[in-house]
Image (cartoon, rainbow over all chains, first blue to last red; front, side):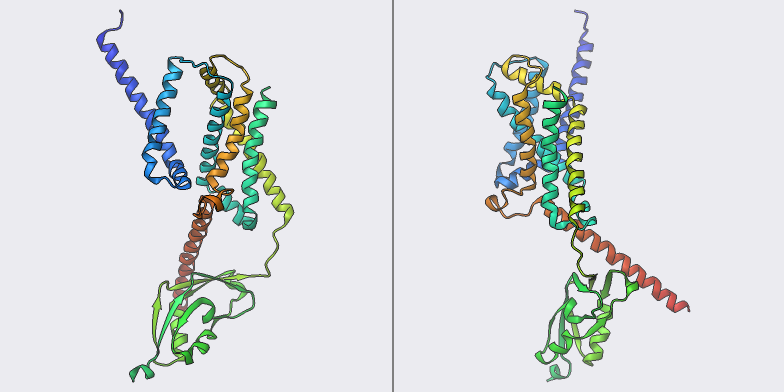
Length: 142
Length: 213
């Protein structure tokens, strides 16, 4: 027992402070990028946005706990497929929201007078992301 | 009885109108008009300005320029403006077809740009380690190449982006605009606002010059 009560107190304080900062940052990022409103709009479920908030908080907490205490489940290989798909969709939403915030497509399409091809340009980004990710995992880091 | 001697004209200016080069801008182009039927024809064909080369391809017409012309046409007229008090006239040359080669270049730029960006992102956040760890948590076994997870993840990215931009499901799910459409609109709106402010500035400075001479 070489930790004094004071040392313990400081540890708790630092842990809480760091947790609040990181947790606030994570949620702020998703709020700024409007991902929850977007999903609520698409599924017409504005009245359930509090559940979505809860999902994000619970997910963050569960991920942290699993990671720190090294919890493991013994699910089959199919679990990777499902979680991977959700993970990818989430990253896709994040990437799309980020692109949108940065106004890349409107400016590019207008400067080059290509408003008519907007859908094509959008698909370029989408297929580019998928191809880049596949290349990364299956070729580059084989 | 007095209404006969002083007809009222209601004018509602549009916000942005295109016009082909060489044509004269008439009141009917830039505004919706409500007045006595006998005046509607002449008002619609009332010539405002002829865009000149030095005007550039955007021209601001202010209500203050329109009112004297209308009063010249109908002496003693009462003008009731509704809504905006200026209109942007866009002079368009024969519309050029956007070239397919340019489109292909931009397409490739975005394609490879996106591909490299996602790879950079993976390296930046150490995605591989996180994925290996995630699969370890799920299955209890460590797999240095969780290909199943990674394949699902990769296609998920594409699906997520499409969902965000609401392109494929637009008809099926709802008719609200996509964020991209809103963004394009806001971008245009901002440009218009800027141009209007700029043209007013030009107008003011040229007036000042005229006074000093």
